[in-house]
Length: 270
Image (cartoon, rainbow, N blue to C red):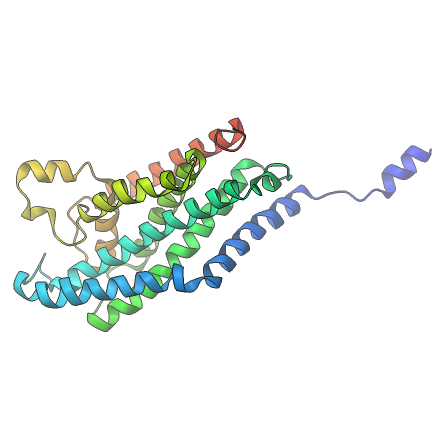
């Protein structure tokens, strides 16, 4: 009788509410971190983009002329925005999650009732938030230099979300395997930067020789940049449907891989 009374008196725990609270906590913490150090997370991208527009757009762009049927500065604007979304989404997650490992407070998440897939989703949402904030700031900078015609707003938003999630997950995987800060900085410096610069940000691949065009099609960033550019200008060097298919496949595959590695304890329980 006493057991039945005690069981009835014990409040039932809503596991969905607990998980939602945990997810919100991760996202809010990430957002607070981004805003708290806005001078390091948002301003540098705006300043860098301003320099790109002044040097490449105004000075070099006058000699280059039209690109893809558009003014050169207008042509490179979507690429510059996407470049900052990529680097900031990646950088936010890799630095935040590795910081949690380095500071030894990742254990608090691992012993919490949050499933690993929700932890991954929380950090990647934080990367998406930073990518969106920086993308908005860089877009505002772009509007000072050129006019951005919106061809299809849904394509623009979808390209930003999928690209940001892809590189947020990439940053998460990097942070899982990184043992020190050198390994955190290796991929952004030696992989992301070259792929971004050769990803059609500053030029159309139609200008390249045949062998370089074929090589460019192996660069995933080319598809992301062109899908985003299509949303603004209605022009693209690749098939937009293929670009979105690749981005969606990358998000799903990398998310599954990140969850599997978290379940195994790879990089978190070594």
